[in-house]
Length: 200
Image (cartoon, rainbow, N blue to C red; front, side, top):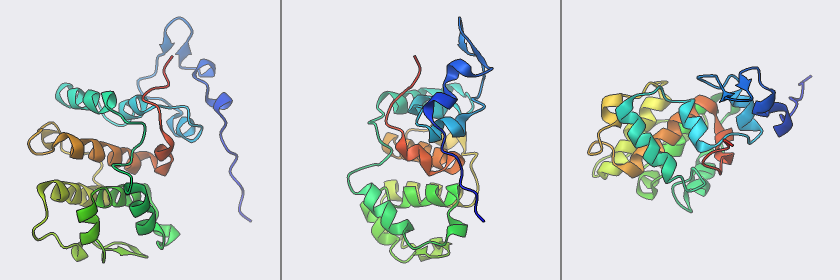
């Protein structure tokens, strides 16, 4: 018999009732101890999620601040991204639907040309990177492809040297990679995030 998990409601994860919260100061925790519950309840913003995903590095922080500033209220790259993602993941076995799988598919479906090149890579048992046609691919597409491969393989500690280099990873690709890293860590509930911040 499968036990149905109780849905977390916003009132249960209100920061004011947390042991790490001090009324005159606010939250005193370096990392939110109830991050997954707050994501599920829709009580966290893009800014807080980034803070709970990446360790503070001055050079990386500057790039992350730009991503936060221009957060459009959705993690999808364009109007077709969500439909491509849903189509690509529709026939997969549940056993393979792990956060890093979703993170890789998120990147591989973010660019329409890259998605077309992946037509034979989305299998019921997972993503087969050897089936992706990368000959003649754009630099942007190859960047997404290479990071999808890293995240799918479980490499969630992304190379900081590359991440801070705007020539290696341009802004659009950087934001998508940041989003994918958060999906790999917290799962697909973060697609529901629409606010930059929930801080008061």
